[in-house]
Length: 310
Image 1 (cartoon, rainbow, N blue to C red):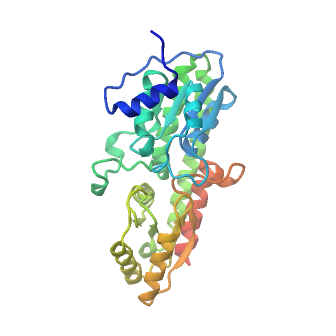
Image 2: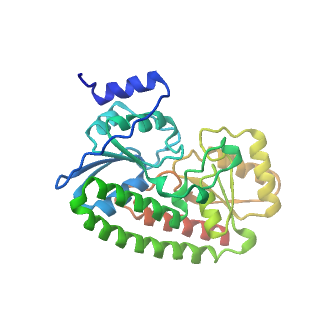
Image 3: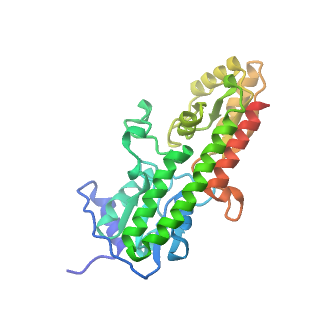
C-alpha cells in the first residue's frame, strides 16, 4: 500500500475528525543526528541544552508568537515531515494545532513534554472548561520535569548517546535549581500586600503558586478568550482598591487591553504604572538573554519585583 506524504496525511486527518491515535514505534537513531521539531521556544531551548551537537532543532513558534492561536503553515508541515521526533507542550497549549500534533503520531514520533508531570501537580482552573493550565514553565521545579522528559525522549531515540544526554541534562537541571532559588529570593523582596501580578491573560498562575503571588489576568488562561467592558472595569476596581503599583503587558499579547485597564484605573482616581513587558508564551529574540529559558525567567521576576516594589 502506498503511503501518503505527511502533508497530505495531516490534511486528511483534519478533514476526518477525531478517531483513535496509534502510538508509533520510534525509529532508533544510533549515531545519526536527531532532527527535532519543537513548538514553543522553551522546549527548543531545552532540546538544545540537553541534545547538544547530537540534535538539529527547528522551532515552530518564535519571539512574540502566541501558541494558543498558532496554526500550522505549509512550511510547518514540511518541517514536521523531516522530523525524527516532534516535541510539544501539550495540555491544550497549542490549541489550533492539537489535532495535527496528536494525530500524526502514526507517522512520526511525538512527545508532549508535560506528560512527565504528575496530574496532581497541575492547575485545573474551573473557568478553563476542565483543561489543565499549560503554562507550567513558570514554576521552575515543574519545568525541570519537562526537561527530564526531553532527556528521556532523546535517550530512547538514540540509546548510544544516552550517557551524553544524562550529563547535559544534569548540568542544565542544576542551573535550573539555582534559577528556582533565585526566583524565590527575588519574590520575597516584594511586600506581601503588593504581591499581585496583573497581566492580559492568566499565564502566571504557576509562578503565583510556587513563589507566593496573587495572579489576575484579564482574558483567562487562553488568549482565545475575549475580555469585555465588565472584565476591564472589574479588574480596574480591584487594582484601585488594592492600590497595586504596577500592571504588566506581555510580549506575545497585544498591549491594548492592559492599556484599557490602566485608563479605567485612572478614571477611579488611582494612577497605576505599566511595570514593563513580561515574556509569557514566547521567549525573547535569539542571541539575547531573554532568548533563553533561564534568561526569560530572570527577566520576568526582575521586572515584576521592580514594578511592584516601586
